[in-house]
Image (tube, one colour):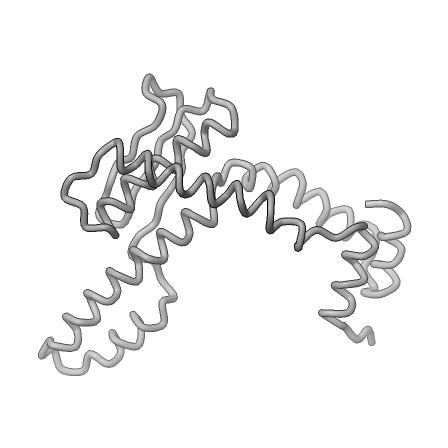
Length: 191
């Protein structure tokens, strides 16, 4: 962050240079490396949400027909969608195979070979997500490598289209413009 931007942050939000440096270091040293290994995170989160919603609907239908006394609390809890019944975890490992998925009652773990380049890792993960989609959402009794490959193609094509056509809408020309937009959208009052 250059001095002009940090100076404006200090003036606008009354934040010290030490705090600015601490947050910037925390983001770039801790958060960003983790973000870089959360491949296809929008796709993973979307599939998790879809499976969670399906499982919650099943539980709600059981709760609605149950004669367990007061099940309203359970219904409200499930309807709030504030917890996860299903999660997908990505784990980089040294495998003899390229990638594999292991299922457990509350989700799936995708193990992918960490020695491949970034683009290949994304393809492997998209393929494994295809298996999860087949099993959890498509109702396919015949989960095949071909249908997982088809899903991987569609997901990677969509990601490619998003990066090439849509991302330009979200790019700001300068760091000062980013700061000005935040100040405009999220005004604060310093007392």
